[in-house]
Image 1 (tube, rainbow, N blue to C red):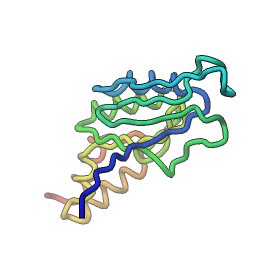
Image 2: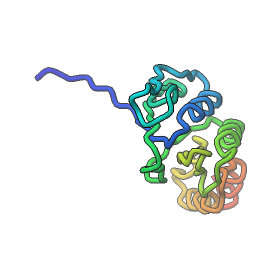
Image 3: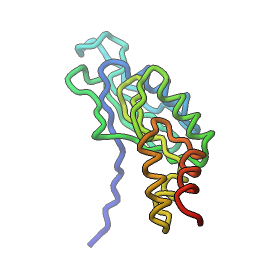
Length: 164
């Protein structure tokens, strides 16, 4: 049987602010760019010249997107996780993406377009999988009380729970 190679990429549905969203996202993530942009012609419901669909890349991941109108909106059922090396990356992505949006719990936020993001330090997963259950539970309890995840607070909670 021949192997068929497919390409899978997210396709996002915006109301009418796709062009603004692409500028916002590509301004935050490194190695990002706007690709093909399809603008409206006289034949569509949108104003001539308005972006109908586009491709953009965020740090190597390609997204397809459309200005589809108000029928659908984003929900937390789909989110994008950003694995951060350290607190400075957490702070950068959190501050950038939550600008005009809203904070949620446990490292989750909604950006100004309603898209959900998880801004997560890799250290969180290390602490949550600590072989000492008391340390892992303490890290989990600390994380559950946070909006933006603070690595130092996670580590302090784990350290107080049980010696290594």
